[in-house]
Image (cartoon, rainbow, N blue to C red):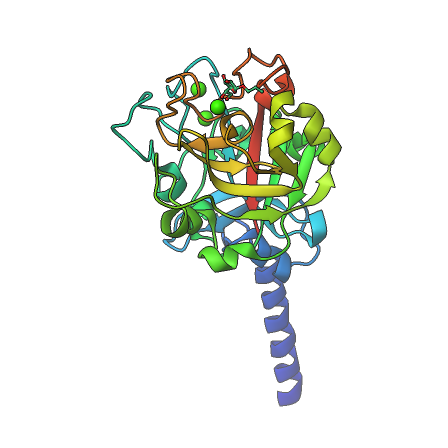
Length: 304
Ligand code: 3S6
Ligand code: CA
Ligand code: CA
Ligand code: CA
């Protein structure tokens, strides 16, 4: 009898264990990251999960559980809501307070604990959740998704999807917050040089597709196949990220996104989340202007 009871107790506790594990990522049992959930529940699918920041804040976000074995957490998106508004409302990844040298870091959101937006509006407005600064990660994945794409189609509509594989974040504090805060501050005329250019693996799209969407004039100044962080232009304005490429020249403002609050070349024309992507007209895809598709897409950032 005693043996039977012990066996039953063991079976019960193992079933309870399974129930709790299977619920990891639910509201009742938030995970620390999509990677933790995927590592625990191998069959986990792409979709929404509950996560908990190191400070205990519970939030919902999208997990990609399938690309290259999955475990990718959506932490932020950079969206340009008004290309004609130069460092105005919505330019949270540069300056919402005008084109000015008064705030050399602009709004400072690359390296602070501010949060904004929501997972279902990542292609309609900027997103920054607590994962951006609280997850300890190794790599990033970026998706270029047309503006206003609904959550259910982020992945299928992302015409460029790529990720890093070398674990570079580990040497910069485990996330982009630490990379920008402690190593490569996004500060006008900042003292650091350019940050690292990390090789990428393509999941969707290609170097040729990226090149066909960039402003024609930048092709002579870039090497596709990287994601490049903290890149200064000729006038020493920093750009937080060059998505899909390494920027070798000085007219960084036409291909790279996010920054501070002042672009000196012809202020305020390059001031904003998408900097100078419209230099030769809105979506004209001539000279230093990107294609309309790139201008009207958000860049989504994932950690793993
Ligand atoms: C390929 C032409 C270079 O033209 C220069 O770049 C021109 O003098 C500037 O108006 C322009 C801008 O710096 C582009 O950012
Ligand atoms: Ca703007
Ligand atoms: Ca924005
Ligand atoms: Ca320039």
